[in-house]
Length: 247
Image (cartoon, rainbow, N blue to C red; front, side, top):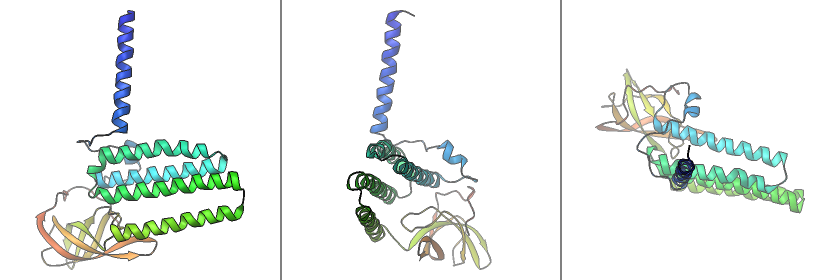
């Protein structure tokens, strides 16, 4: 290979690398749904794109927390907390910018994961700084208390702003006085995805979208209890798409 060809190849490689880095920092909405091969392998049954993306966000956040716990336990250097946070927040920004449109309601998910991740960062970086410089048990407990109060305040704000006591589902089956309804993952209603048996109502036929009342439960996901409205337009959710049994 001549020097000119070598330099040309290097230039192309650098250009592709720069282009990829730019698209990662400033992602454009994707027309193709994400695959998330590793996350998909953890799911026993096929799920919708919305559920897959929601699960991926949960796993990313859980991984972020575990890494921070390890860093705080194994080292006293707050720089490691920053080193873990930077790629995580960049990736979180990329996920919402690239695939956020595949969520049924993006804003609650974006607000929740952005704020709870920021609070987690403040908790770990603050704990590291207090332990490193103050070396006072009272100061550590006081800071932990401040973070706990901040989390409770955010929970109150989130429920007040986005929370609701209903969600939407698709009728899958009618059996006597019961109907089986598929409900998507819904962070605003605090409902887990799955199939739920609910009391039958008039016009609740397979394929129709229904509005479902949910019952809030302390420290647990809300529970769909009954159908409060039936819509006569067909759902975009295919009635033949496999779903996971929940209750």
